[in-house]
Amino acid sequence: MKSGSNLEKVLTAGHFALTGELGPPRGTSAEDVKKKASHLKGMVDAVNITDNQTAMVRMASWAASLLIMEEGLEPNYQMVCRDRNRLAMQADILGAYALGIRNMLCLSGDHQKFGDHPTAKGVFDIDSMQLIGMVKKMRDENKFLSGADLEESPKMFIGAAANPFAEPFEWRVHRLAKKIHAGVDFIQTQCIYNMDKFRKWISQANDMGLTEKVYILAGVTPMKSVGMARYMKNNVPGMDVPDEIINRLRGAGKGKIAAEGIKIACEQIEEFKQMKGVAGVHLMAIEWEHKVPEIAEQAKMLPRPQL
Amino acid sequence: MIVAKRKPFDEIDNMLKGYKKVLNVGCGTCVALCLAGGEKEVEILNSEIDMARKLAGDPITIEGITIERQCDREYLEALDSKVEEYQAILSMACGVGVQFLAERFPQIPVFPAVDTSGLSANQAVGWYEERCRACSSCVLGLTGGICPVTMCAKGLYNGPCGGTNQGSCEIDKNQPCAWYMIYERLSNQGRLDNILAITPPMDWQNQVPRTLIQPGYKKPEDVS
Ligand code: SF4
Ligand code: SF4
Image (cartoon, rainbow over all chains, first blue to last red; front, side, top):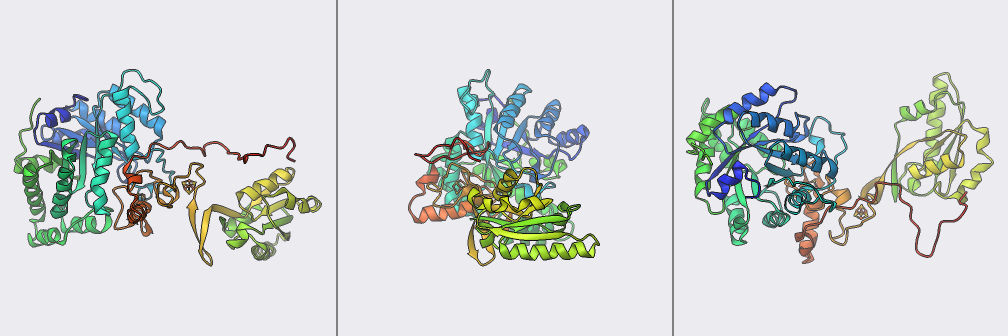
């Protein structure tokens, strides 16, 4: 075991993992975090806690991580490169570990231009690839990035994101290989809607032997409405939403669109369970946490393994 | 070359409040080429200031002079005998020129009339694109001659990020993704190996004021 986190245990025991996601509030309400967490309890193996998601200021990811730990959930602590330099990042990693956080997701972060402080100075002292390497160095070599010794290393289970859909497509699997080389233990992908492209990507990863070196969790976000699908297609960088998804939602008819969105998600999950190289699902029910029990149930992902 | 953009008029007007006699110094090199602070721009700005102050009932005497280069002592000499009679100096040079003026005439307030905005190439008349952030550790050899520090919105060394959008950067459809271009160029040259390896964290050099002394030269004892 690298970290002994629940997520790591579930994956190494060969169970099909399920992770969830929770966005901290734009305010100080611990209640808000706990309420969202209550819907996820017992439903998922770990919960991603986003870090100033879409470059909007929110409660610190480590703080919300602690709040959900108090509720008996395991956090997957997200960290972006946009807001901190290497000193602050390493300090936060030490602190997070000291407080019991065992999973980390290393991200570049959306550009500050998208958020509520578009003229902030983006830090990007190191990038996501280098962040993965830094956490691994701290964990496995007991060293800071500078090479200086550190006492009692943070044993983190190291995660990163992958977007199988961004161009150039041929590069995507090499980027995955780079992240594995940097030291990543698990990958959570961008929300998948274009299944054809995803199948191609995962089979390339299988052929290159990459799926034996890393656990890949397929990203799933159920569509709530046709408007959401269209927005994702047109406005979210790096998102690939085929027209057939939009047409299928539209065809479901008034009042039944959200149910159809969940049905599509469950069909996807069913296919991922069988798909070689996929070790689990990352369910991002954005501002729809209360639907997670229903989705997990319908996708036959319950009960979650107790290890 | 170094490019700059003239500051908004109100900002300049505001800086000159209270001064009755001002010298506006243009620079004949980079900022003249990028149409921000050469002889012609000095003339235009001076007549704007003159007119605005007249209208405001607070006339000013503003005169202009454009020297070859404000970042070169040799050319600044020409100002030594002139500046005494002015209460303030306005400089239309880049940030380097402004500071060089301020250093040479420490008793007189010096104000910048332009915003210095990069090391850029001239794509067409009036159109300049930034290409270098003077990072002191050039990686263009690795990246196919495309600067990730300048051209990638996040300055990533191991791109592209997940936001790259059919060749555009996530920040804007009209902004090409630097890493998409780097990939394409290296792929065409059969040099993808360059970016298959991980580029380690950068040793940032531009965190302190840098000085540069070419081999065979040394810092003179007296530089004034
Ligand atoms: S890497 Fe970019 S910023 Fe650095 S010296 Fe080269 S061109 Fe300039
Ligand atoms: S989309 Fe491309 S240019 Fe824009 S931040 Fe990502 S890698 Fe850099």
